[in-house]
Image (cartoon, rainbow, N blue to C red; front, side, top):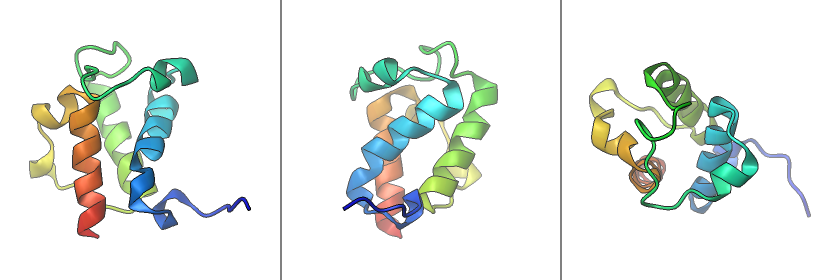
Length: 97
C-alpha cells in the first residue's frame, strides 16, 4: 500500500531517504550521484553545487520535510562536512521530536 503522507509525518528511520531526496532536489544532483553518498562522503567544499548559498536552502528544506527546527547556533562546519555527519544531526533532531 502506498501512502501520500508528507515527509514530516513519516517515521524517523526514513531520514536517510528524505535527506538524499533533499540533496537531490536542492542541489540538483542526479539520483545516481546521491545514491553513491556514504557516511564519509564530503559535502560542503567537496560537492561544487553545495556552496554557502545552498546551505540555507538545504537547511530550510530539512526543517520543512522533517518537521524540525534548526537553531542558528547548531549549524557548524562539522555538521556539514560529511553526509554521515549531516545524517546523524538530522536523525538526532528528529528523535528529539
